[in-house]
Image (cartoon, rainbow, N blue to C red):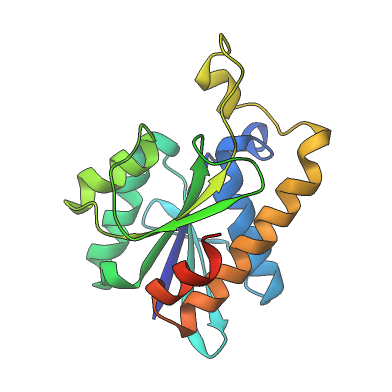
Length: 186
């Protein structure tokens, strides 16, 4: 079994914000495979299904970004889920909009959702897909930027990035994460 955690904030006011690209990717992956993410468990909305012959659980923490680790820990503890089967999908300021970067370990890099997961799991070693949102112009507050929506000019890059993230997630279910990184880290 694989479990994929997409990071974001609950509520319609955050739905289309940069900070919610993790939720957007999970929603598209769920739609591709007829999975409904609507079970309320472990401080999250969860959907279960089979993708490419692999039982897969899609998890959207409902704790708000900064407490995402609470949901991850609750799921791990309740289901005895292995961290090696986890992939976290989230927004990244240091990656250009439209690009994705895959890693299997590393610091939070200032991302509070990842910081929370590291705190609650006790490790920096877990698979992740960083979805690019670029950095704001100098003088633009980071919090306002990440909680802002993507402008129309980035719509195509956003859609392409979400699609590529789903492709990488699907590929990773049947291949090692190292092979997935080699294929999708351009």
